[in-house]
Amino acid sequence: MVEIFSKRDGPRREDVQARRLIEQNRGVITKLADHLSGGRYSESKKPKLAPQAEGLIIHIGGGPAPVPAPEPKIRVTTNGRVIAVDVTTGRQLWHFGDIREVKNLRIFALATKDNGFIRPLDETTRTALADIDGVVLGPSYDGAELATDIGIRLDIPPEA
Image (cartoon, rainbow, N blue to C red; front, side, top):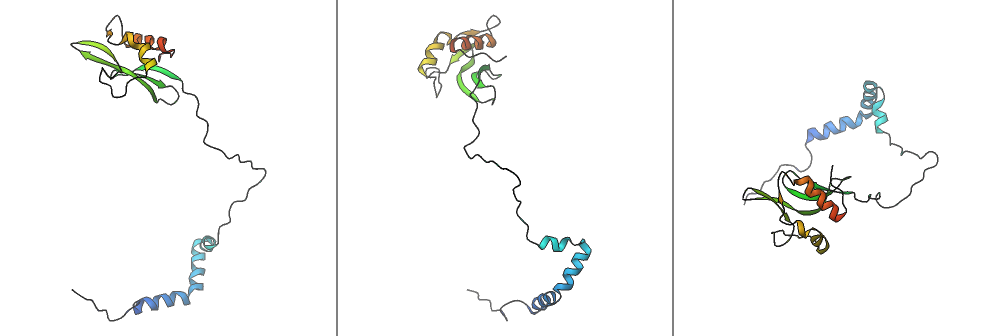
């Protein structure tokens, strides 16, 4: 084990002398600082006053601003997801299923456990959309028409 012994405890003699010199000449240093800064040095050292209220101030405490009711629209994304989004926020509200490619065919797969979805649709939505599960999309029936059909069944307009 190594022990270090210093010759003296406390600040160095040079530091003590410099601190004493500054304290003895504090008035001269302040005058010079004010002269060089146009008086801003002393102004910066004064305590700041808190702003005072003027006139009538009404504060109504409460919770956060009310969130508007979501305005859902059906959207078919470029990666094949068929979802309902809120128009105002852009957030996804529901995921109805995916458009999958099986043997060079584009097929709509409804979000059910049988189709491999982790979180399937609720019972009422699943029964409303059950007849379009497995429908083939092509030139005669595309994603926009699929979104329109889903919107008609769920009373949600498709995205324009």
